Image (cartoon, rainbow, N blue to C red; front, side):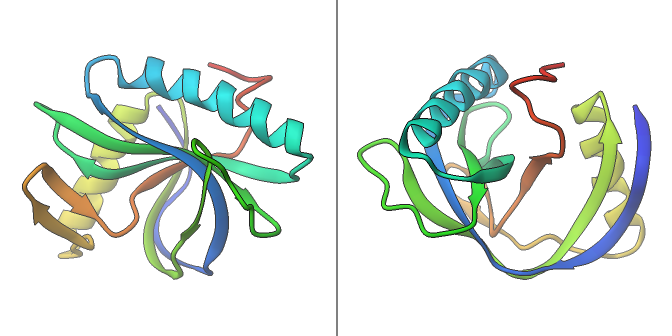
Length: 149
């Protein structure tokens, strides 16, 4: 893993989004993410929606059970959506942030350890399905359609 910037606490404004949310097991979750990303790109392109960056949001985390996740994209304007693509927001607030290249799981652990070492807590609540986060996500700063891995 190469750290490009951070870790740090950053303040983000509210951002409009369009996304596909699903529940999937942790094992195989990234294959599901990639499939949903392709679907999202195709639909937004068909609708002529200008979007970016894209993100992978973890609404509820349960590494031994089901993960409630969303593949989405920041949009300049509200999206009407349909039965698959839903409009949403990434809420304004303070975020623990780390910009890195490769090894997302290691980067995640680095960010969690950094926050814990500084006495910072995440906006997380216990949920019957696992840990429910107010807004935990990975933003992809390069276009995953052209730079997959």
